[in-house]
Image 1 (cartoon, one colour):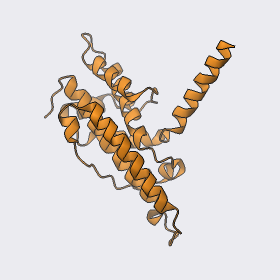
Image 2: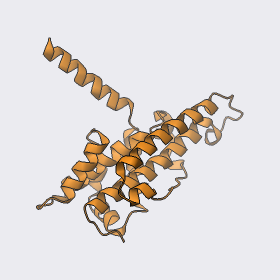
Image 3: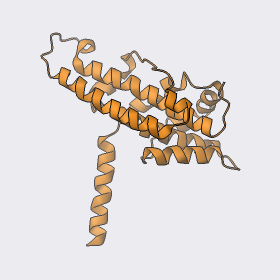
Image 4: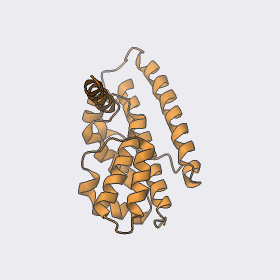
Length: 196
């Protein structure tokens, strides 16, 4: 009975992880856009191992993923592929904070989104990852709830670019890019990477 319960719980956890994730193809665009504002050394490092960065994510809790990435980067015998994989996993977990759950819209339109980088958060610059994650989770939930209310209004146009769903997905995408860049900056800073 215990084995059955543990198996059922594992399936439920995996299913929940699937529900709170961007479409697989969206991560590569989020990561490409998130690299742009990063310190040059980190952006180059991620570009050098792009095939690892764009590989499928290993789902894990965000704080654990960040700790794992810092640990990988500060290991005595650094394996750069494992370090980038850990950074990728932290990026996936971070992006998921902003998932608007509009997979078909994101899949078909993400290359058309005008991405806005909202800057490096003061909490991240000061090293307050916990405060940043708490604030971003709360802000994301409030924003998505407010945007979903507007999406219930009648659509005045048939153009996808002016639909409420497109707007919601586009805004959430920009927040995901910004949050991933912030968390990657934090990881790099904590690992004593070059911040220029």
